Image (tube, chains in turn blue, green):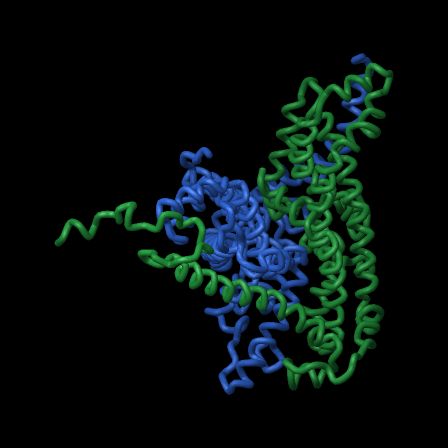
Length: 302
Length: 309
């Protein structure tokens, strides 16, 4: 019965492994090596050791990008999770209860469908869309209203202090619906009797949320935080398309992915760009490890 | 300070059954009904506001696609004077949106098919067969989940170039497949493990080969999992921007939709065919709305089942 097992196993694994090693593993391995060279694409690469990394430390654009990741890393998960939790709570247990069954508010189904929709749109398309929304003159969606009301237009993407937050707002706009659905799934698995019992004891909606829902949802929250953190480390498409000349004005919205792309494919500094890639790799790894360590706690059994 | 005030209210002070807000008779200490009403009221406002924030930019884009340039610039909040379908024609042919759209369909169709075929084959073998190196190969794949694509961007570009696949469909398709494998295998391996082994054994005893067993018995049984992962991959690959930007940069006729529309908006903005750009955006968004409206349940389940591991 077991004859022909090995040819079969090899046959099934060969193509996937070959593709994966060629296009994923091999480039990853090379990235570390290229980051130690001064390769510019034309002549053979020369070994320069940690020179690229030393230059990174003095690179203003690099530090600006790291700083922006810091802002995004804190703000994106905090804002998105707060809004999504609030909505998910309303949609699942915010309404009245009938016969011990907690219900969402009226129209919960409709909201869940609408909120999720931005998730299926490509980020690059959303970025083009919001270029129109944010346009600084009266042809923009928001400024068109403001100027009709006789107010000064807001320079969403042009004002350096505002640009990163404008981009962050779009990321939140896109993400909220996904996490509403994710948290809804988590909340649906919390038994109704727990709410029932808490209410019997006179718990208010607010108490219910902080003392019952939140602790029982902890695992889902952790997943959400890691996912949003990874999104905060990426953000290439939105910065490349939405911001003023790719990371501008004057580097006010740049991210590491943008700098890697620019250094490699505009300036042909392949070695330097790879060093940034390695730096990004370690930042992501540190973030994931820290998150898992910091959010580790006894999960509540129910 | 009166220590009494810090004590929790005695059970007697509480209404007997707070669980039923609809119960008549409001002899309640803090009147939870008004609390509920206030909370639900505020909640409704918040939900409605967010729905407006999501819908209005998209609706506004659709309307602007029918306007002409002067309408777009003078009054962004009024309806178009007439339905100018020619904006769509201009976007589809002159701005090549039709071409980009079909490229996207072709690339995503091929790469999702390839991802599902190769991914399920590898996942199946890794999940259900014991052999030397099984765990090593599995972890090799799964480790790909942790790395950002940007780390590998530069070497990847040169690997594809050396293989002579830069600016070709097959280059992009193979790279999409390779980068979709970690999640696909991770998810499907777990799924194949849950399938009962009795069916597989019966098939083998009846003289069914391993390959036939996979395609005719196991794959149909794994359909729910396959659909979830396929949805995840289709949406992810459709939205891809970075990889085609690097791998197809010099072959404009092979550009995908995201790349094409971003290019119209970033580079051709000075030519100021705004209505054409709005029409292009509408062409990009509308099919997704239709597909989402039809498969809304499966899409939500597919994408979120990917997130909860």
